[in-house]
Image (cartoon, rainbow, N blue to C red; front, side):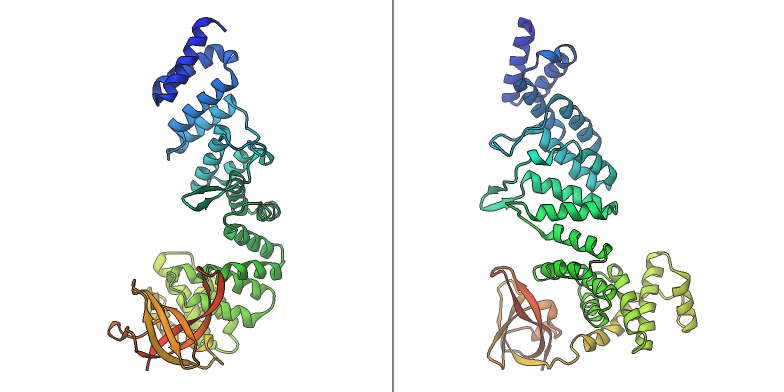
Length: 393
């Protein structure tokens, strides 16, 4: 290396330290084109950090991110951080950022291609800790982005295998999406009991409609129609937008057709009306069912159909369960939840959206009837019975 090149590379290092990124980049690019062989590992690392900080770290422009990451993977090799993760690796961070942004852009095949630039055996499993909060390790991030893309691409076997591997990480900060993907894959593989196991682990912590709907589907394909209907009704009664639950309504119609034919056709009508309102495709069979039932084929006011079906859902949901009685003993300061002191001596937590009375009645000492449902206490990390479907008496 000649003296001029040596001094210029030292200058670029100083400029980077002084956060004069543009000037440092100009020098590095000029000498990389003519004297790449003179770059030490330290020079390559510093050049990579210049590119990462300028074009990748806080950038949303996918083209710029890809171009810079491609260059970094040419300049630098991936560091093995399993032995020493004290110093971050610009190569690793650049590729992980690419995977994240490609997933956001629904470029799932590109995610898989870029994932091959990473050797997962070199990725640290150590989660980071900032202000008392745990953040995922690079290995967890890698598995998270790759399994997401694999599921979208219907690469079920590989998604299943890699999600299993992810659950074995030493410091896993969040297993939610890995268990969700495992459940989806298990369903596709016909392993319905396994899918239900994962989904029930999730629903204890995250009682969202789509998890309830997935459990309903698993039970349905496993031939357990009673449990399938129970979870489908639970999903239908959640606060999620009606259009999100269109397949749930279709499943309920299939499940109740023999015993409740009139209600079944109303569920099909609800699905039909939503599809018509949203200008979604309508299968010929569904169109024919609505026409044969003599229903208005121009009706797009699906919320009115849904309102009429809610009492039916509640009847099915709480069939065989006796109502409980008590008083609202405490409303939390934020006004969105509280506790009911029941006649059986127990105190039950509730969310305000479960209260069916007027706002004027929502206060302490109001007498109420209610039902019980399993809920997850995040603070204590345990399942408890919560008060639901609360009515004033």
